[in-house]
Structure formats: structure tokens, C-alpha cells
Amino acid sequence: MKNQLVFSEEVRQAMENGKPIIALESTIITHGMPYPQNIETALEVEEIIREEGAVPATIAIMDGKIHIGLSQAEIKQLANSEDVIKASRRDLPYIIAQKKTGATTVAGTMICAQLAGITLFVTGGIGGVHRGAEQTMDISADLDELSQTNVAVVCAGAKSILDLGLTMEYLETKGVPVVGYQTNELPAFYTRTSPYEVNYRLDDPKEIAQLIRSKWDLGLKGGIVIANPIPEKDALDEKFMNEIIEQALAEADAKQIKGKDVTPFLLSKVKDLTEGKSLEANIALVKNNARLGGKIAKAMKSLS
Figure 1: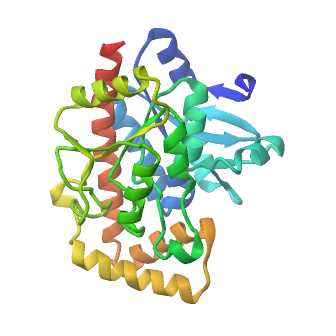
Figure 2: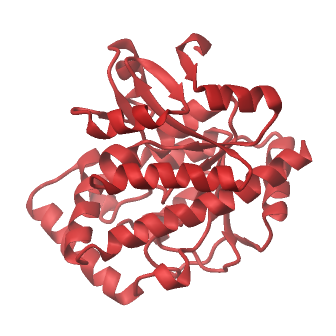
């Protein structure tokens, strides 16, 4: 499989010189944000990681090859490409065999990161158990990936369009620790709080790095969710967002939108209903996660 990996020059040099590297997903470029905010945010997040002393590795499949690290030109090409496939675990073999273009989800990014030897990943929010999953069985592949792939994920919690309670229960069943960074409550993407508690609170990136090391030193496979609340100045009101999400969910149900089309539809609808405030919050939280990710990556490297 190694011959399917294409490393950017920046990432290759980082590996040779032992610098900390952070994986980034590419669905945020193709499916998560509109143009031009998608390109702007992708490039700004990479720069934040560099400022923190780490190296960004945005991951995507292009012409059937897994690219670990993208140039600015490749990010722009991806953003402007048509028929880009959302690449989760199920989709990777098809995309590679058919030499298609794929943007990696949380699960897809974790798989590719592990293949490349990268153990830390920064994203916006993880997928999870969708509302109404007791009827639809709509559960993101991200959760199973977190149970079996050794990549720690810095996020703003699970996306608030999900059933957060069932998502936490599923992660507990799979043995995935949910660590709150300077918080006791599970952040809910656009909001700093939710009705659910994290498993453990840690207030220092070094402590998080030590927990990650301890888990894998024990031979316990799987990732860790590092839940980092959106900055207070950028957070939206919890009650307001729940009302908006319920409205968006009702429309998705009426239009019979299913499967992997649900999340992009809901994020777009929520953006419209909040008059763009949710997009601003999304951009702010991803940048905030990049800053924390950089600090954790450096702390992990100091332990090795």
C-alpha cells in the first residue's frame, strides 16, 4: 500500500527531520464549506499549524493516489473539482482502483494518516449517531474508526446535528476515551456546552500527550477524542442552535435525504437559517482546534 502514498515535499522533509506532523481532512474543502471560504480556511488552518511549530498534512485521493500533504495549487484544484467522492473506509478501495478523486472524511483521514505514520489529526467535529438512528441505523463510520485506528482526533466535539447522548454511549461501548480540554462538558460544535459530560478533563496539552502515549503503550488500539470547545466569543447560543437544527432536520426528512448526503445538507441549511453565523463559527472552531493540535503535536514529539 505504501506505493499508493504520495508525500508533499514539506511533509517528506518533516518526516526526515523528525518534526511533528498533523493530519487534516479534505471534505471540509469539498463538502463542508462553500467557496471561497473553503480554500481560505484550509490555507489558514495549515498556516496556524506551522505557526505552532508543526507541519500540516492535508489528505486527499487524487488520480487514485493518497496524497499526504497538498500544495496550495492542489487545494484549489480540489475545491474546484466536480464529482469529488466523500472518501470513508468503504469508499477508499473503489476510489483508488478507479483512479478517482476523493476527499477524506474523519474515518478516511484516520486510515490514511495511520498508513503514513501520522498519529494526530485536527478536524472540526466528528460524525456520530444521527438523530432517529433507532429507526434509520444511521451511524457514522467515524465512530468505528475511532475504535480501531491509532490516531488521536482534536475536534470541537461531535457535530450538533447528531444525537450527542447516543454518540457518547457508542464511543463508550467501543472503548474510545473522550477528553475535554479545559472543560467538563462535551462541546457541541457551534456551542461550548451540551447536556453531556466528557469522560476526563485535562487542562494542559502535555497531559493530553501523556494520555495518548499511555493508551497505545498499553496496546489498546483505537483513537482518542480530544474535545476542544469553540472560543466563547465565537460560540452560538445552545437553545437557538437546537431550534435551528430541528428545523433543518425536519426539512431533510421531508425531502427524504439519506446517508452521506445528510450532513452536507444539514450544514448548508443551518448556515442559511443562521444567516451565515454557523459558517463563521465553523471556521473559528477549526482554527482553534489547529492551535491546540499544534501544541499537542509538539508535546507528543517531546515524549518520543
